[in-house]
Image 1 (spheres, helix red, strand yellow):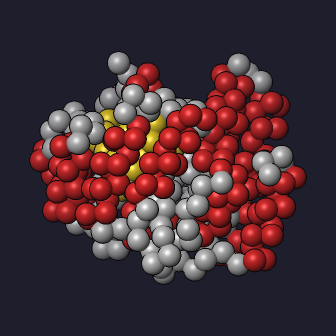
Image 2: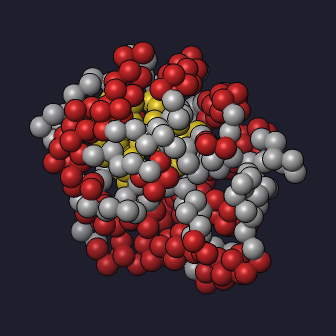
Length: 306
């Protein structure tokens, strides 16, 4: 079975719900998973990705979220775990915990904060792959957060490792790099999976061959994203564009006032649409202001989501 056949085209990185004191609300997490599965807003769930605020969670919280997701999603949707940490040692430990829960694919971000060289990045992933031989690894490139780009030449080296199967690229900084990754890997591993990880780059990247989208916006727009893929595959470009514009507008609005991580605005937007209480983003992310929410809410009303 190919990756697409098992995991589909829409991978949804789950928002992590919090209570009044920023404690993780695992019961609400289960409620959210049930809602998203029932509404069929994605093909696969991702636990503790960037949208799930992985860098703000403890190791134990991430493991418990994996446990909750595996249980809640059983028989409904597959689960991929985001297991990337700042150090190789901790990443291996967390990836092994995911494997114990039966999670077969882990999405592993380039190590953040320490800005490793390309050789350091290569050694990082190679060590994880060797320590977790039964886990399939999806590389995760997001230079806007980690401070270093995973270069195509390094991806080509990593694609030669059997259990490194693909990459998620946060394409906002360099949308044409999807093509660079394709060219770098096509002769090394013709089945190498390339996903776009930026909702507002959906159209530019599927034209280049991105086979799917890792989408926080799918909490709201899962059906529309699915229709965009269908329209593109059927050559209905105008329809794809019409469906894309509302997604673009909402996702663009979550970056108001220079916000790089959209969670502070995305979370209350998802609350408004789903009715599920998610709580504000975890510190140090400042909560959305009334003015910011007025902008996003107005767009959601205009496009018929509220």
